[in-house]
Image (cartoon, rainbow, N blue to C red; front, side):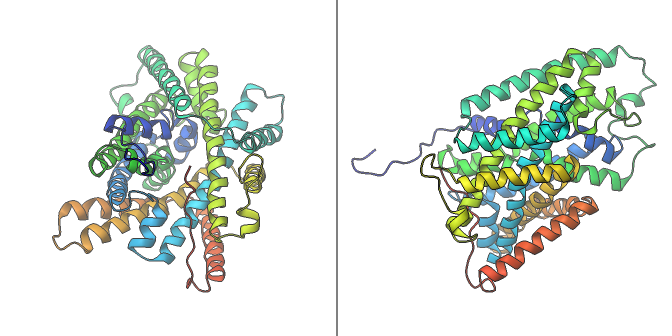
Length: 443
């Protein structure tokens, strides 16, 4: 580096590094926490839903990867939509992202409380909710962060548990009497429980399995050959997670058919794992709780930082949201607020509804990115190519169909949130004559 030049990020991340990062971000056990909700909503067609969601995410991943080329330093759905389509639609996309960030700590609080209650039923559920919302808040008040190495070790541990689950499931399934060849195809299609409404409703929730793949686009400045590798890594990550997730839910559906009720829907996979090998009840339960606890902690911090970014840029009242604690150098007000919202929301929302609300905002963002990619690389290009047309159009269409098939309660509450945000935006920007920012704050 030349004398006096400013320090820069090093381009050291290979395609393999980017894919591993994406898998760590999403988690190798991503579908396990929502398996029960998916199974009930889709009548047992969880594998099919996971694979349909994978197709939508693959097309959307192509759009994210291509937009990362155009905006390598500011990778976010808000930026893409605001710059390529219109600032107002960018604002709508950003407001949907705010809902995602605020709800992720809430659903993590709910799941950890549910699983802890299974382990220690003597402690009331509301006590566990207070405990986890409080712990997330206290940890982030101290500015404690998980390092990439710890996250990688956790992912490796989860991967080892997944391998054990597959072996135990295979041993259990092969040791049971089968009703015929249709037994092994039942998780893909069961005429007794199939409905298109159920399948697409299930798929609209299954998108949660892939949430986080877009984080790969934030590494554009540290990736080798980013114009090629960011797109490839995003697509390969979605594909790898999709195949792994399909395998996890496939064996689970074989062991626990949709006709049989779960003792607890929110922790269903733990009960399924325990059926194949009793010790897995505790092992899988603890592994999932550890992973979701880490996700909840990170999501809590991310939500507080997003609110700080909005406060610092006057998108929200700066005096409260843009304040930094002098001792710990964290947005303390936002940490407390996110913790309070997680606790209050966990007392009223179910895990299933919370998951659907997360996807309400995520699917809006995904549609926005696909639309932005379509305009930039097809509409505005002189040479019209099918490669620039098919992925964003199909990605947008499938995401729209999934959004439309979200539950009625999720669509009503999500629409109320969006209406509130638009009304606030109109007031704050004098009818959008001024701009608003939803950008995350860089490290």
